[in-house]
Each structure stands twice: as structure tokens, then as C-alpha cells.
Image (tube, rainbow, N blue to C red; front, side, top):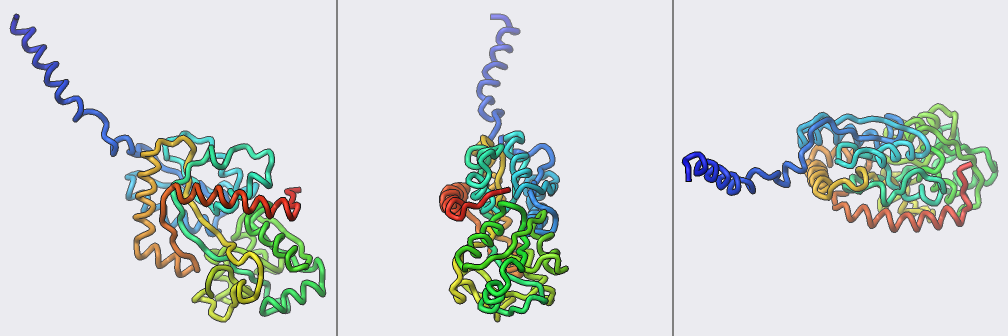
Length: 328
């Protein structure tokens, strides 16, 4: 055998030995090679937007790429959700939103352009924030009993601002009016921040919205807190009763903020994003900032979100059908 042939054989043997080491590792398969987008399907200033801008710098450090927050408001979050559902399934396009709106969408929008459970892949839950029921100071009510009495004496006079037709706070307001036997108008806006500002200005008069976006207006006196959902009173509003204390229905309603990506994204990429998200949520400064705004972090697995969605798609669908809620 010639020397040339022997060298070629040795080189081939060396490559076969080195091949496993040269193969892409799981870490390489999970690498991010371009900027990451977090789509917020509501206007700037709402709960989802606040959280996205809180998380983005930390996620950027974790994946080694810029993380850009992009607001795509409209259709109760469905425009932004659809954009993520149709993106390249590689984990570079994320959706951060109140997933209660996703749970309502299948029953409220029969011609939905994407399938919530098939076209979006849960990454993890981010936080739970109770709803704050609040009114413009011109409304002569300081608590639930006074608000209900006023609404019954003035049917249709109160206007409840919401984040958009079909948003969870819209459905909550409709179901609450039905259960209390009151009549008020529902006025849609492009996100919770716009809805809050409308009530502050007096354009609308009542709001049911996430504490993260609404609490500052209550604490500075621009809105009057009437009640909060969740298991206990908010530390920032110790004199505002809970829905349970006021014997209101839907005491567990609130904003469940979750992070998702495009369906069919490789499981290892989803796992990488979930691990980094949970690390971010464990940071003391992140937990503190979320707590200051009335929320609490909810780290967990993609499976947790998948189960939550399946359960709530059914339960909120029952409410939509029972109340015969329509989008037009």
C-alpha cells in the first residue's frame, strides 16, 4: 500500500473518531443567530407591554441577541397572535399577552385565522395580576354596594372601558353585569392603557383591568378603587375589598400573562426559552417590580400553560355561550 493511501486511510479514521465531537450539540441546536422579537398584541403601556419591556433586556443577555418589543394591537390580541402563529418556527418570534384572551378567542371568533392550541407553542407562564374594578372620581360610588345601587338606578349610564372586543376584561364586564342584574355600556379601546386613560379623562366611567396597568391611576387618585379580584387585598390598596368579600362572582378572574412562540418550534428551543424565562422570573429585582404593580410571578413549564389554556378555553367558552356574547 502506497504512503499516499496510508495517509488517506489515517485521515478518514481520524475524521470518523472526531465526527461525534464535531456534530451539533443540543446547545448549538438551541442557539439564536439573529434578533428576537417579542410581539405584544396590544398598544404600549398595558400590562403585557410593561412585562415585555421588563423581560426583554434580561432575555437579550441570556440568548446573546437583541430582543425587540413590537406592539401589534387590534382584534382583542388576535392580530399579534396571528403574526406569531405564522412566523418561522424557530423561537425567534415570541408572543407575550394575557392568555385569557387566547382562551376566549376560539368561542368568540368562529373564523379565527389561527388555531390557539396547534399554531402557538407555550413557553411558560409569566405572572398573575388581579383585576382592579375602578371608577372615575365623578361616579358617586366608593364601594361595590354603592356602585351596584347607582348602576341599577341609572341603567346604561355607566360606560365600562375594556382592552378590545373579546378581551378577557370585556367578557368579565359582560358576565358581571349579567350576574348582578345591572346594565352598563361596554366601550372597546386599543389596549388596557388606552382604556385606563379613557376612564381617567371621563370619556368612559368604569374599568375592570389588570392591576399592573391600573394601580398607578388608583394610588395617585385619578381613579377610585372599588374592588379587586384574587385571594387577598392588594398591599397598595388595603382599604379596597376583594370580589369575594363583596360577594361578587368571578373572583378568580384576572390577567394571566404568558409567553408563547410559533407552533412546531423544536422542543429543545422551547425548553431553552422556558429555562431562561424561569431564571429571569427568579431574579429578585424582577419579582419586586412585578409585586410593586400588584402581580406575582408564575414560573413553570410549557405543559402548565398548555393545560391552563385547555381548561380555560372550555370554561370561558361556556360563559360566552351562556351570555350569548357576540363580537358585533
